[in-house]
Length: 245
Image (cartoon, rainbow, N blue to C red; front, top):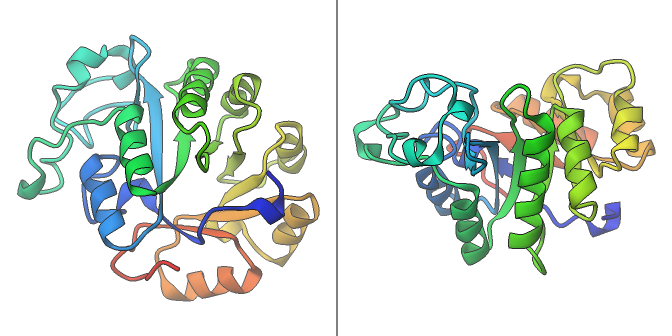
């Protein structure tokens, strides 16, 4: 995918609908779409029996009624959990969705997707391979999801099984060698914590041929600063504040 071929909109709904619905659930994706967002971001990891599903944390406590390491539990148990009640009574009974369920929603409704590969520690390569293989199969012939990760090993694994899917390196710091790593992984984008982007870092990324995305952009002045820098994608929790283009 070249810079000229970039198919994604500027505004991206963080974890489906930001803070307006339980993150990484179908309820969040539905709300994001209702708010006019044409692209959403989500986190995907593997169950103990290899099912790719949506969850940000390594553990279950914060966003479900489950306990312990999510990646150590089989999907038969995980799918019984309530991933909505913590957010509000209107979401009681909302389950953890599989990547397949999100694929169905996106493909049926024309929603584009940024999948963050979020492996359980120690499962970086396996998670990258499974997610990329599943995405390649499900989005065949359609605008593909953008696969991103903080873990170079996960992106390398995704590259090995689905080299044609677009990838982006996630950064929470501009560590030594970040640009070279993104080049080695044949990424199309670099996705930074928003304060890392300035005229210098944007110039470096763009000169190397990368699109630039920022997370998590939740106030108007910062959004205006980033747009002024020419940032290509803004991932936000504030679906109540920003109207997507």
